[in-house]
Image (cartoon, rainbow, N blue to C red; front, side, top):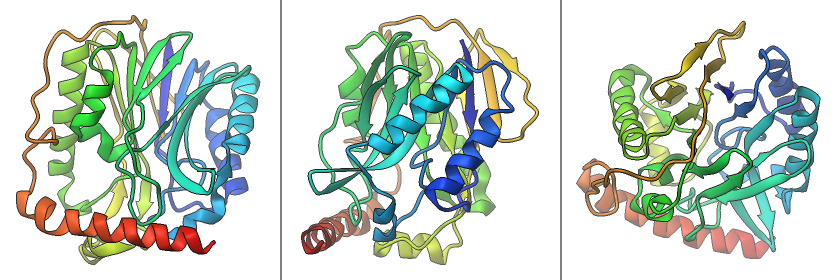
Length: 292
């Protein structure tokens, strides 16, 4: 299977503009079998309720567009978008081919100020096997592992819209390498980490304020973690490609967690700042949602 991950420019805004932009990249790929896009790729990653104007009611617009692209370029495509369902907003991700969508994954620990959070599934069943999808922070949390550990899996996708310190890319790469390799080794399947690039838009909450003050950006650093594959060349810098035979595999190793996290991380930040920020975000979301 010829798999391409596209590292998108997050600074391009507007659904129509991003559709044209994404297709301009897809058109330059050589015989793609699967195209993997980042988190919230169809609307761009945003951290405030300004993103709600791009919401896709019951996933109809995204599904139709994905199927059209899949048919035109004879491929599967995996895309992130903002889903609206029964009045709630979700950070969602789907996989489609020319004939149908094969399921939707919602981010369980989504940005609390703008998305509904919950215990959502992480498996999309496709003709080429079960695909495990962990959207950004979910990929590092125990619930993602618990949701996929007993499945036979062909591929793991980690679509991100992840801001980080541009002056410390070495540490960011080290973190990515750690958790992606943990999953690649435990399941023996390719792990695709795909992140956008570009400036960090205004983000609600204390965590967002801290990241903005620190000058965080979306740094990309996309990579496909695997062995036994052939690297595919591309005419565009946004594309990372491999060719590999996908095979459903069972997990052969356990993954260790520190509480609910795959890495130790900053204990004080997680417990003194992040928890309170999430709680405040949930309250903000419910208030704003109910005012619509």
